[in-house]
Length: 206
Image 1 (cartoon, rainbow, N blue to C red):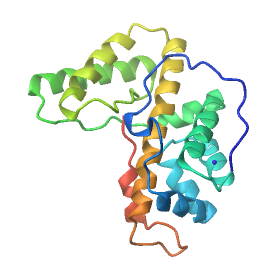
Image 2: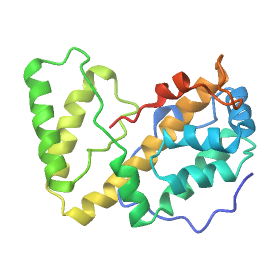
Image 3: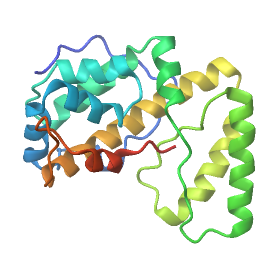
Image 4: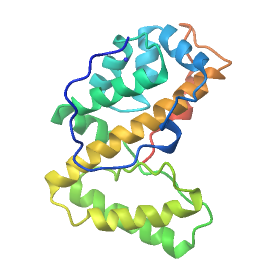
């Protein structure tokens, strides 16, 4: 994901703030985007799969390169996320896992968070997905716990729509991290792409 013509604006099912690091002018070093644009297709697709677990999403972004700037990449990522089929969304959600969030939170709060996550996964069949960009680390446990409890009241279809939009925001955030990492990348794999150790930096988080 050249600049693509945008369809008529679609309203996401839930209004969520964009990650703080992608508001306004792009701050990601241009060398990160240049590196993504120049990667072999399979290396780019593999890296993008660490941003969103939908193979269709990763293929679309990899196949539509090169991108002239970071906002064009993020816009294309949004459009690809809105176009995910239900099967694509199921695949992407299946690839998510809960992040380990300690940050000095009280043990009782962490126990409550683990219990809430387990109840959520039993109810909805996938990991809880939320974008917490803009919240300091010490607030994230409380934010997660409150969000899980609030969203447990949703019907399955409503929660699936909310999860899809949160997944879109998480993918944007991971793309920015990917560009930052590519900008400072040292090692390369046998095909000229990032090494396997570099891909480990993009393990899925909830």
